Image (tube, rainbow, N blue to C red; front, top):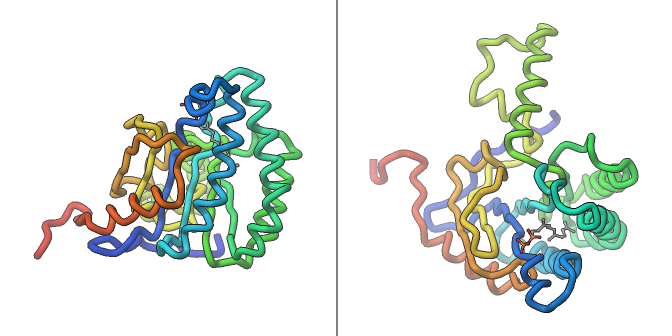
Length: 247
Ligand code: FPP
C-alpha cells in the first residue's frame, strides 16, 4: 500500500468529493424500446463517458461505478457473456481517451473469476493511467461489499498468522487498509438510478456515513444535467457524522 487512505470528503455546503453510482435500469430502458437487454447496456456504457467528463466541473474528484456485481453471474449466460465482451471493448476503445483526459482508472472487486484477457486489459489500463490525477474513476467489476470485507478479513487473518499483524490491532483504522478501496476516500454521495431504493451490496463498509440519492431516471437517460442537479442537492444537505451540529 503505497498511498494512505484519505479522509472523508467535504460536506456542509460543499459538493461531494467522491460520488459512487449504482447504474441501474439498462434492461428496462431497452425493454421499453423493444430491444434486447444488451442494447441497454451499450447505451449505459456510452453514458459513463459523459458522466466522467462532467466530474471536474462539479468538483467531483472520485467517481466509483458499479458495473458488475458478484450476484450478476446469476443472469443468463448470454447476458453475462455480452457484458464481459462489452467491458473488454469499452477498455480497448476508451483507454487512450481516458488517458488523455487525465482520468486515473482503478478496478475493484475479485478478479479471480474474470477471464484472463479481461484482467490483462484491466491491468494495462490501470498502469497506463497510473500517473493521472484529474479524475479518479473506479470501476467495480465482480464486486460485492460482503465479499470485499470477507477477502479483507482473510488477508488480515493471514497477516496475524504470519506475525505481521497483532490481533489486538484489528480495528476500524486497520481493516479498511485491506479493502479494495484502500487508497480511496469514503464516498460522500451514493446515487442509484431507476427508482430502486436498495444498496445491493455496494461499498457497504465505505458508505457508513454517505448520503443516498435514489432517483427514478434509468441509467441510459442519466445525463450530465441530471448528474449536476443531484450533486447540487447534496451541497444543500448537512452532514453530521453522528455528532450534534453547533457543538
Ligand atoms: C444494471 O441494469 C446494469 C448492469 C448490471 C450493468 C452496468 C453496466 C453498464 C452501465 C455498462 C457499462 C459499464 C462500463 C464500465 C463500460 P439492469 O440490467 O439491472 O437493468 P434492469 O434493472 O432494468 O433490468
